[in-house]
Image 1 (cartoon, protein in one colour):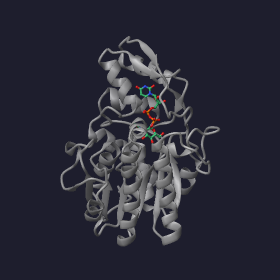
Image 2 (image 1 turned 45 degrees about the vertical axis):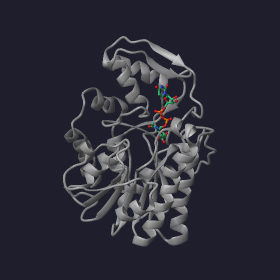
Image 3 (image 1 turned 90 degrees about the vertical axis):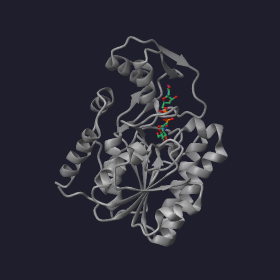
Length: 323
Ligand code: UD1
């Protein structure tokens, strides 16, 4: 099997976190991988042997400098991912989500390294219609969305102004093994509630929708972005399918097999109503298409998947992609 990225020196910021650690698992056997993380939400247990750890905070430019020294490629995954947390602490989350992105881009100029940025569907704000093409413009209702929108714009401008190879991946709602913690995303929250026999808490009427994409697909999109010749652009990373939060709650209750109540709480401030990716640009320009549907993806959580299962999900697709 030919792995798309090999013999490179690679920095993964947030490499001990949810998405970062799955990406590191995929890259590490074939590359020299360095992880910059402060372990505030990530975990050392997720890191495979042989990876170099630079422990540090993204708000410290010297930590970024140390992490990026001599690398060919930077996957900038480190961020505060919670929209709610950004509403509570706009300045602090801005320093992490935007300030550090600018520092990573600056350091990449010095190293002449490619940057693949973890951008977000949050850049589209509350879209006028779905599915959302990359050309849509947004007015994000949360500090988180503003931070991601600005970082995404900076990364594309660094390509135009300074000739840096940058690729923005606008992640839709990612789920999968290792997603954990108080702000970890609705699927893991609902699963935890149902397993504990507690009510599932739907915020608002539950008619809001999301495009849920499995982390194995997100890793594959990152592998594509690491090698594509189409730089200076942004690509949606989603499935193109919409699921309402209410129907998700019902589905999870069914899968877990516990008849817990589904309760409705107040809607979340800064929440968006509908989100779903238009996927054609990613397919035609970087050859990325999601392969794991929600049913199969939820199975990896209900029957907790080992790393090997996730590797296989990524690996099968890499082989298919290679034709
Ligand atoms: C998520 C990501 C964000 C990403 C964005 C892209 C997380 C924590 N956040 O934000 O980083 O950029 O997708 O689209 O992964 N909900 C409930 N009950 C709960 C929890 C959530 O009803 O207990 C609802 C929320 O009100 C919201 C939806 O589920 O309408 C999704 O919430 P969440 O999983 O936190 O993700 P986003 O805010 O969409």
